[in-house]
Length: 276
Image 1: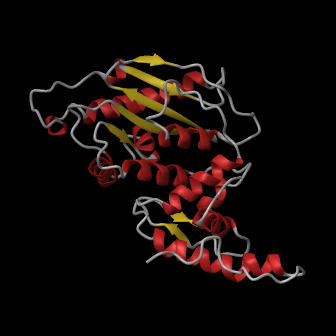
Image 2: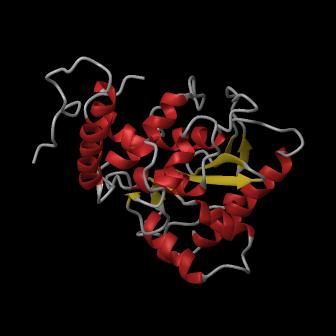
């Protein structure tokens, strides 16, 4: 794995043994960005919804990108249980993760069903509901599609409001009647628990795809997501956590390496202290 500079120290700090699982590494008002959540990005672990929501917050932080929306996992939960949710939660999601829909191109909605993550992309331009699934199942396919349609109906309801448009003459679209599109993509290993990582990567690399096929998902992918979540500008405590990571490296990693080895002059972190 090729990590450089502070990335190496941050990776060691995220996944280091003996550190508090409750320590907040990514500050977010909608979910818990603690070490316990990020540790589900270890190889073989099933990624929890807090990680997916942290990814949503990270990609949504690009204020220049107004033509795409990424919605947290709670949106699909509300769509599936319309009579059992707090209206304030839906209002918060709309205020935090959406905007005017006049020039909206795509909406990304992570979905979870029976321990499996997959992604729905609403293509407003071509009027498609894109179904991305890294572990397809002939048994569960229709149930997963039905869940997408629940989300589509809620989106359709929200976008029927004139307040959703800057130009009040813009007409809403019948999202629930969009065509289902199911691109041919590679499939994860059945025992890999990588479905959440695929969903995260589809959202992170939204602007790179001529197709939706991911060529490589591995341990490096998981660690890179964790590092990006901690070090990204969207994280208000990024600098603080990086300082702790450098101190952790100096205090433990190098000392551990030198234990039983011939002393060397270099005992500092991979890149030294953070620049002011």
